[in-house]
Amino acid sequence: MASHRRPKQPSHGYTSVLTATAAVTVVLSAQSASADPLPDPNKKGVQAQIDRLYEQATQATEKYNGAKESAGKLQKEADNLHEEVVRKQAALNEMRQQLGSAATAQYRSGGLDPSIQLLLSADPDAYLDQASGLDRLSARQSDTLQRFLSQQRGLQQQRAQAAKKLDSLQETRKELGSKKKEIQGKLAEAQRLLNTLTAEERAERVAKEERANRASERTQLASEQGELGNEASASGRTAAAFDAAKSRVGMPYVWGATGPGSFDCSGLTSWAFQQADVSLPRTSQAQAGAGTRINSIGALKPGDLVIMRTDLSHVGFYAGNGQILHAPKPGAQVRYESMARSGMPFMWGVRI
Image (tube, rainbow, N blue to C red):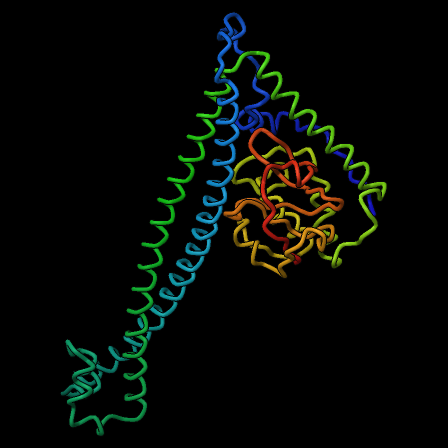
C-alpha cells in the first residue's frame, strides 16, 4: 500500500481559506501588540466560550450541508419536471395543430365535426360526458382527442408539481442563507473573543494546535509502519476510502468544504468514499444511517465511520488503536486524534 506522507502546507491557493478560518493562528495586530489587555481572572471562561462557539459552528455547518444537499436535489427535480413540461407541451402543440388542420378542412366543407367542437369547447371533459354524437367520431379522431385531453391534464399536474418544487427550493435557499449567517456569526464572535486574549494565552492556543498536529504526524507514521494494529478494513472499498482520507492529512478545516484541498468533517468522509466509487450522503446525520451500525468501539475496524456527539453532528474514520482520522473544527486541519481526547462522545460506528 502506498505511503501517505503529510502533504506540504497549502500555498497561496489556501492562504485566504486559512486566514478566514484558522482563528487560533491569527497573529497579533499592531494595536494589540503594543497594548495587550490586562490579565483577566475570567480568561479561562473566555477560552471555553471560544471552544463552544467552534463546536456550535461545526454543528450548524452540518445543518447547512443538509440544506444545501436538499436544495441540490430539489433543483434537479425541478429541472427534470421543467424538461418534461416542455416536451409534453411540444407534443400537445403538435396534436393541437393536427386537430386545427382538420377543423379548417371541415369548415371549408360546410360544417364542424363533433371532434373539433370538443377541441373548441370551454369544457372538453363535460362535452365528452354529454355528447350524444360521440359514436359518430372516427376511431382515429376519438383516440386523438382522448390523448389530447389526457396529456393536457397531465401537463397541468406537472406544472403544479414544478411550482411546488420551486416553492420548496426557495424555502430551502432561505434556510441556507440563515445557516450561513449563523455560522459566520459564531466564527466572528469566536474571533472577537480571541482578540481579547493576551499574547501569552493566544500563543498557548497555537502551541496546543501544534502539539495536536505533531501527535497526528506520529500516529500517521505509526499507521504507515503497521503499528496501529494489523487488523484490516472490513472491505476493499472501505480500505480505498480510508487510504484516500489518509492522503488529506494536513488539509485545513473549512465549513461546507468537500475537498480536495479543504474539508469539513462529513466533507472529508463523503469525498474519501467518492474516491472509492461509493456515494455517501453529505451530512454526518445521514451518514450515521448509511451502513451497518457498530455499537462497540472494540468492534470497529480501520476505515469504519465513527459518529460522534449526541446530535450526530460529527463524523470521521476509525484509524485503529482508539484513534480517529477526521477534520475536527475551525482553525484545525485534517489529522489523527485520540477518540478519548477529542472531547466528543462516541455514539456508534458505521460500516459501509
